[in-house]
Length: 219
Image (cartoon, rainbow, N blue to C red; front, side):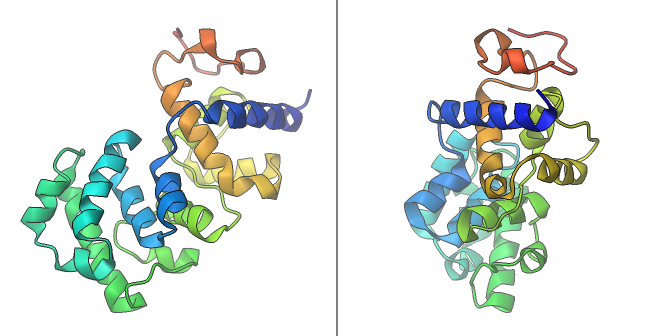
């Protein structure tokens, strides 16, 4: 079995396993609201935070500020209180306010549907931009975060040193039709089974297909 065949087989398993766990926060807000602004803001808030907490905090925030205009006007002290329970809340409060102000000043409060436009927004990097493009606008892009970088390397599908290398390498392995959904499948598995330290290899249905590159201890 070559790398591409193994990658496709692994993806089929990930799609099946995905149903067992909580939906990623960006996917949740896209599925329930079809609102690019909510997807953008919740994704910015999700950095270094668990999706369950990000979803909870985002819901509370959107009760009082569900648009760029409302969030830009929201008092920063009030904003900090709302998102206090999420990590790095002060920095994130500043980021989402600046992002909202930028959207108002440059895009009439709307979230742009092109990579170049999204990357101009303060606090938005390639990962966040790619998630918005894939979730909200159906673009064939691969959003690479820590999970999306770690798992394919651990599984021996690729051998890369940074997220951009990972993005390019995965594009060569997976069919274009799969690109926009790869992130949510790998991320959910990375959060629940193939965790950073002591992955749960004993219950992992991918275990026989995985060389466990770099794994020193598993459960």
